[in-house]
Image (cartoon, rainbow, N blue to C red; front, top):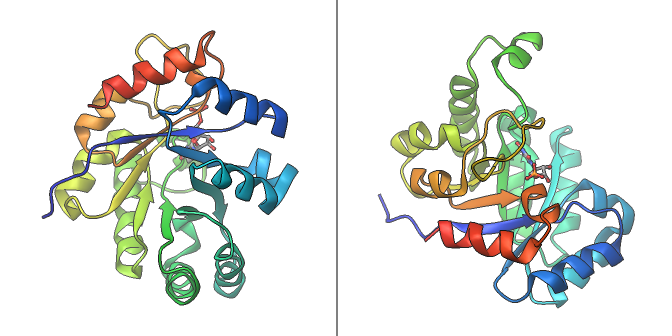
Length: 233
Ligand SMILES: O=c1ccn([C@@H]2O[C@H](COP(=O)(O)O)[C@@H](O)[C@H]2O)c(=O)[nH]1
């Protein structure tokens, strides 16, 4: 088992406009290395926005959560291979075949890209899984989907920090594990249900924590980001 690298902060740049997003990055300064572009800004501004963020020197995590038939997902990965993206998400629920096709497209067209399979969304709890006829606990379901994902050859997982300990115990330090659902102590409750503090997530073995609103909505976003980063070392 290789030694785990230090946990890093990824900013979820979930804002309405390109101008707001760039102004936020200007406020946050140099210490931020990773930016996650999600559905909100990608659907508004597309590949040009991805290039613009990468041109500013950030590493880009493109969070599109692809979920379709294997051929369609593999072709999307092929298209994304032309972009300066380091991490890309797809849904583990698409199944092993979809994940294998996506990973083959990655290997053929973008060997430096890492794919991450989203297991159980951090906004979901056991009751919500039951409503979908999934009778596993979130932890059991994450481990089940992680087995399928890692057998497919995909490089990493997205899950909540609550599942880090059992995942690291089963799969070791090699898989990239990215954990959203990060809330500093004292944060107000919202739709994120499986949450952890930055320090606890880093200690539990997260490769990258993803943080959006606790930074974006802070009165001083740069101070909020600095305080989270200080908790990771
Ligand atoms: O299970 C998941 C997968 C992705 N996300 C994304 O992470 C950020 C979290 O933002 P916050 O404002 O810190 O809640 C957001 O972009 C989600 O799309 C997730 O939360 N959970």
